[in-house]
Length: 261
Image 1: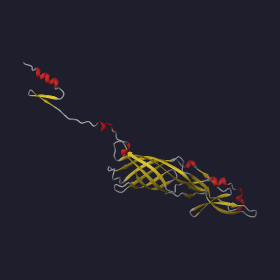
Image 2: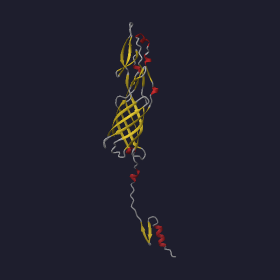
Image 3: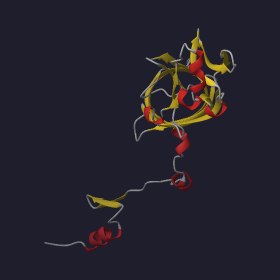
Image 4: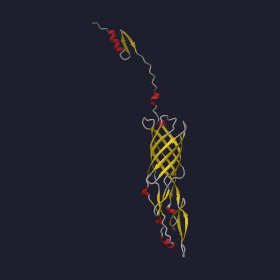
């Protein structure tokens, strides 16, 4: 049996990019263009993120003032619109499920005990307005008068994190739904105001105004649960959102006008 040294040399020479068919050497060649610049560019986090500015109004679903036996209960609320900022980003490889976070600031109504009148003997709900009853001392017979309840507007911060679902076509936006946890550095305020006022004017001299109210911090919490649904026109940057917030003593609804940056 003979052996062709030429063929062996050809195999050694063209081992990686050649083959020998019927004694003929066929070379395999491929032109590969490597884009080293593109290989170094990693996807940016912002490529799959949405940023938005918010303008939000709130309304307490449960009454902000309600009467119990012997006292009124007042819950703080953000009556004026809030301004906020948020972002959402795709969660892993999902194109529909996003994680989200944001924050807002507004002015919340809070009972200011430091501005209470020292002659106050109780409170009365006059239609929709809550007033404090103050005594006007007189040697013959005490008289009563009314003053506005000292409720002030204070800055109120809110932060939230949650999840959001929306369609595959991100450019179309359309409907989105989600849920989130909202945290506030300052709790909602819940105050009990006495509605028990003696009918005998002589007893009013013995009332200490500090006994006519109490603030119950333990009945509210820092964390709230919120669910929302959002809609925007086809391929538009602005959107409308409706939300419902639940906490221990308060159910609050909200309407948000937002704009994607």
